[in-house]
Length: 122
Image (tube, rainbow, N blue to C red):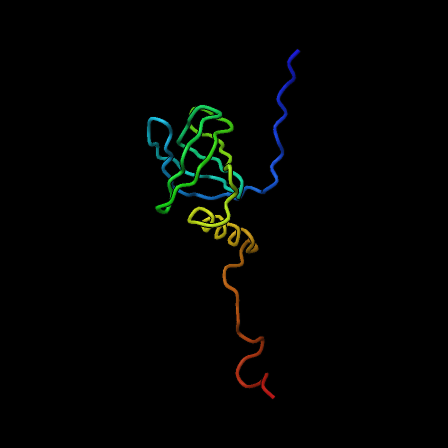
C-alpha cells in the first residue's frame, strides 16, 4: 500500500517579489521571474523543469543553486539546498521584506519634530 506524500511545512514566510532571473538546467537557459521568495526557496514563473532536477538561478551576476520541488507547464517551485544568507538574491529578499513591513499607505517616514518653528524649543 502506498501512502500519499505529505508536503513538508515551510519554516520561512514567502515574500511576494518580481525578480527577473535566468534558470540554467542541464541542457538550456530559460528566462523566468521569481514571484515569491524566502531564504529557503522560491516560485519561478515562466520557467519549468522536471521535479527533483537541479538547476542554477542566475541573478545579479551570481549563481544560486536550487532543486525543483514541483513543476507545472509554466512555473515551478524550488528549494535552495543552502539557505540564502548573503548575495544579490538575499539582498533582493531583504529589500522586499523591508517594503512589506511598511504599513499600507505609509510611504514617507518623518524625522521632523512634531512642532513647527521655534515653539518647541526651550
